[in-house]
Length: 216
Image 1 (tube, rainbow, N blue to C red):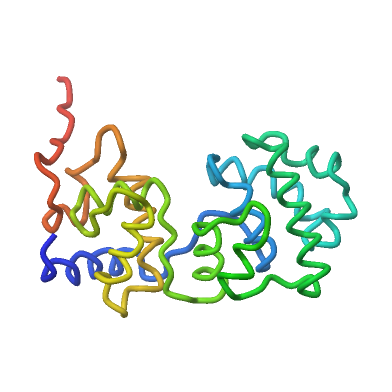
Image 2 (image 1 turned 135 degrees about the horizontal axis):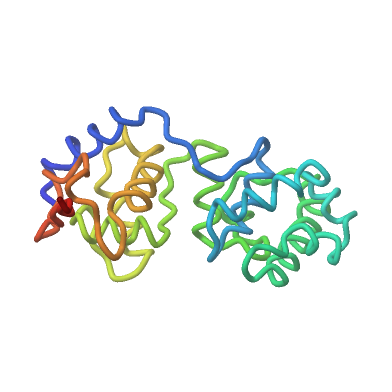
């Protein structure tokens, strides 16, 4: 994608969705952290179903610890890899209570020191909770960035670095939301819906996927 295409690309996405939000349900920074931690290799829909039951009962680090491991597992057992995620969340809660007064830290270093929290999770929390212009590169953003030519890269980190360089400041905070939604609902892996894509004119992907023909 040419540099001159980037502003029009994001302007169209912004005009269609001026205030994009994560599809994970949360009301506090800790709930966001817990939801993102649980969402690895799982859908936001699946995580939301579990946290709708968990958060009314336990939505602070201490409350999660008070549940105990088996208690926590009971609430999240519908999520893939729930046993390891429960252990990570419990360990993270212990650190939050012991080292951070039960509060979620606002630095990458402190976030990535929490069990189960990698670079992508830290980027989501820094962006959504603290408004930092980070790029949380998941499978959707990785695919969209490469397919459109916006930020080609062979690894998520390469794509992240490219995005940080190429996305103009005015779009930086919200851009990862727009790219995720584009990849989730339009620029899908097997068959991108190019015929209904707002930004198809600025995309390098060829050939564009034609609209399915209707049977008479």
